[in-house]
Length: 210
View 1: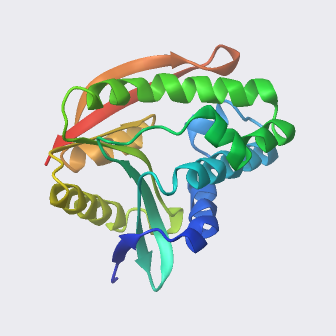
View 2: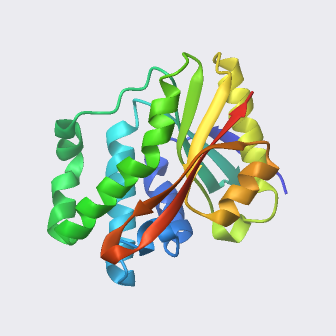
C-alpha cells in the first residue's frame, strides 16, 4: 500500500471532517457528552468543521492519502501557535452549533476538552521547541494496517525540519495509549476527568523526544 503524505488543502476540509466523523462516532470523548447517536454525529461534524475553518491558516494540517483519498489527518500546533479569539470562532459559525446542539452538552464538552488538553498546553510552555498534536484521526477502514505509525514518522520528520525537538498529545483511549507507547511515547500526565451525568473519563498526556 503506497501512502502519500502532504498538507491539507482548503477544498479538502469536508473530506477530512467526514473522516473524523467516521473515526470519532464511538469514541468516549464524544459518547459521554452526546449519548444520542444522531446528535453526536451532528456535534462531531459541527465542532470539527468549525474548529478547522477557524484555525486553518494558523496551524499545520497534515494528511495521509491512499489512491488520492484522505485516510488520516492531524493538526500540529507549533510553539508559536496562538489560539484564535472567541470572536474568531463565533465568526466562523460556532453560534450555529448552539442552535443545532443541546447547549448544556456542548458547554460540558468544551469544558471537558479544556481540562483534558491543559497538561499539554502547560507543558508546551516549558520549552521553545515543543510541538502539540491537537488532533489526529485514521480512517477506521485503514486502522491496524501501519498507516498510523507511518503517519507519525512523517510528523516527526516534518517537525524536525522546522526545529522541533519534542512532540506531545493526549488521548482518552487505552487502546490509543498502547499505540502511542508502541511508537515511542511516554506518559507525563495521567488524570481522571469528571464528565456528564457523574461519569468519569481517563486522560493521558504523552510525549516523545525527536
